[in-house]
Image 1 (cartoon, protein in one colour):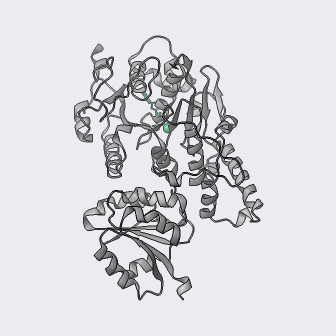
Image 2: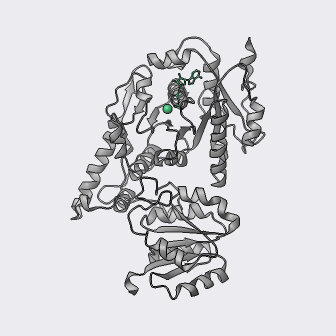
Image 3: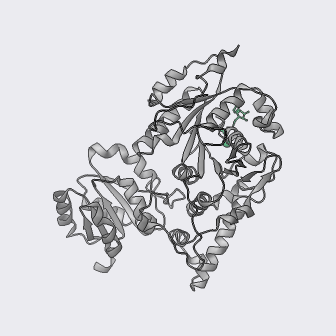
Length: 472
Ligand SMILES: Nc1ncnc2c1ncn2[C@@H]1O[C@H](COP(=O)(O)OP(=O)(O)O)[C@@H](O)[C@H]1O
Ligand SMILES: [Mg+2]
């Protein structure tokens, strides 16, 4: 029986609670304690030494439970995680569940652990829904050096280019039709017209709206090659590695695919094979699949590998357009991004959803200075003032809330595939998109790294909020 018992690793700085639980677990025929840590620096070597099936994380000083679980999972994707929360910590539950971490309230009962232990090893069981997960179990945590993947199974490691100058920007909005795709396209086009140290920027737009993406259409571009072309190539290469190891790819579980992916590295030069190029601007576009069914075949580990490769690429700016959801593609794009443009409209449901999303990200200690909030399609008379919206979002006083006016040219610009930013002459919408762009990336034109928490300097040229409304 012993051999079949699931091996638990306990992490808690509350030694008394840990000992109590250990005592209770002594009599279990389903689970056994294989290791424990009461301090953060004990966690990593002991997990490596004991290779548990399940890690139960209680309170830990100097770290945050979600991040810790993700760091361990990065190296050991097969481990199941259970957060043991006190009543005070229960508000974290949705966040943990979203990260694929089970949640139990303290004091943890042996029977609860026994029930959950039956789920471990079932290949992607997920606390969000209790069924085989398509939801993410792989996020990009801030990795300590010891976890950085540097070897491949059969390919040389490609040298990483420094990331400081790269800009991976995710355009997100927790509601459909608010202008994410429009803004992704316009911002990407804007940066193709900008230079850095006299050299035109290399810009890529990526359509992470995997099933119903429209970036290609909105630029009159073909949809082949696309992300799915890349995914098939990744699968072929991984299958070859698996066969070289004498295994049948068909027999691999989702977790095993994750493990193989974690050890693989793609050359960033390969991205060129999968992009289409916008002839007028040299914008590179990685479009979503042609067929909705193909999007179902794109898994969390593909997305991870793709994002990780994009981050190492030599593009100066990468814009990722997302769907208004919390699927793998979107959440991973948010976690990989150096900046996020959070888009909404001045409508109560869009505003409420942004607030809910901000709450979730704040609870996850997501760095808020990465987020630029943009209210799109603002008309002359709105029910809510910018100040009211700012107050509702509880924004830091130094943080700018960007607004883009409703512009009747937009519809035509989308229908004809000609970006607004390429229209001749000035317009309020173009100015506002430029102001938003300049808050994201520094170019020869200037731009700003304005954000909450920096030195408080704001861009000199910044227009007062809603100034374009006062023009007539
Ligand atoms: N600033 C704007 N002014 C006028 N219409 C806009 C503006 N932004 C977006 N739209 C309209 O809203 C529609 C939905 O925009 P889209 O970018 O596809 O939204 P999302 O990607 O968030 O679903 C577009 O087709 C366009 O007609
Ligand atoms: Mg869209």
